[in-house]
Image (cartoon, rainbow, N blue to C red; front, side, top):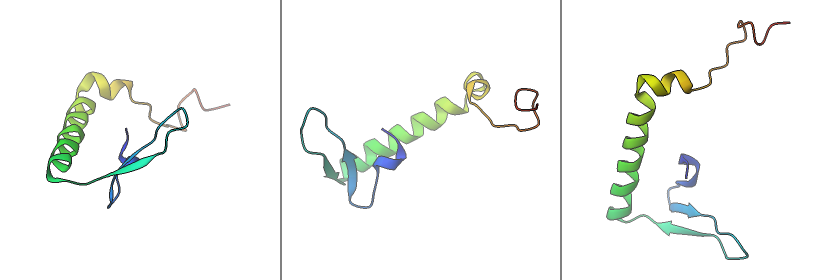
Length: 66
């Protein structure tokens, strides 16, 4: 689930196999869980090992030049 699933109304949940999608309305518990998940993701991506793995577009690199 990405940040795109969060809205002012709540969290969008897409279903499969013909089930209807829905939005889980924000509650204090859901907001706390969402904030905790976002914080964990930020900590994980901030680690040096993960910074090296993130793709960064650099048009001056040899890979993109002709």
